[in-house]
Image (cartoon, rainbow, N blue to C red; front, side):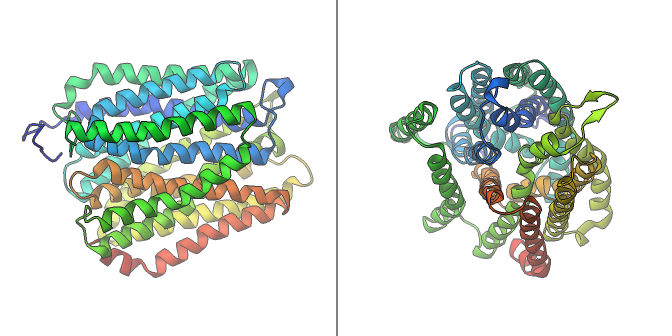
Length: 483
């Protein structure tokens, strides 16, 4: 952390004990996130008579994409608050509280609670994720390779909760009551907050102060202006959609358009104002790699929506007379990540500088693109009746290979290129480009009203494969820009 006038010039490193506390906290936060993600689209698309919202698959998928992308986008103001106002610790505490409140709201048996609950969870996630990532980065030292190793270890470890969460929330939601699944997600985040509070003494000064604090008068001015605009807009949209006076489709389209613009606007604004003291070539390479990664997130985010609906409607889930909940398939992906990540970590170390960031991105995008090409074959097979679960298992295996090659490497890249005082915000930029991919995927799925599902999978997979080819072709130029 960079010392400022309002924080000590010397900070004590949190060490392994601090890393362990962060791991446990994020484990519970991921439990709440993956637990809800596993059941949300199924709940939205379930008939009203069965306790669901009765939405079409396309609308449920678009709303899910909106929620995921909002959680990514909220990382930008969340990262700014962590860097300039709250510090990472208070950001985690405040964001975690909002996540708990959101899940509790979702657990209430009222239709209007859906939109308010999703808004609270997304807002809280935007506060927690960049702040948590910045604290994890602070435990890894200043060397790029050490930082990437720390993020990879952290990313692999928290997959434990991603395996367990869909099993717990999926069983409660699909076999007992939908709202009980959301309540379990709330309990998970609450436990994470308790763990974080009890472990604060282990962090020394890490995350105690804002890295680049604003003067108090400036803080009050910014917060007043933001509240004067953001709060009324949020209230009008949530209340309007919940009451039916504002069309949901119009809100989703408007939000999607804003999502596509925000990351480029943010980086360009920083550059024009001279706030970003980094070579233009470095910024350009970073932006292009983040844009390429967004095509992976376009596919990745459909695990809980498109693939969840495929598991429910087109997959034979009978095992010994018991019908496996469709949400349980969401546990397969993180389980594969746990199995694959150690092998990839060994390969990264073994290959050394030969496996550069662009090469890892190209490999991950190739695996991600091939997963949807394979889903096209599965969708053709499903036209004659429910298909074997092996299709989804192999697809999730390719998903996992892609995620291990892109997600932690992208976090480490954002942390390494960030100028002093911009750590949380650059980690949030990584999330913003993820939101771009999520929104594109959610809108692409609407094409299935006019084109066959296999053609949709070929189209989405082809976009990721094209990005892989471009990254591989220009890998040397991209690497030169980063150095």
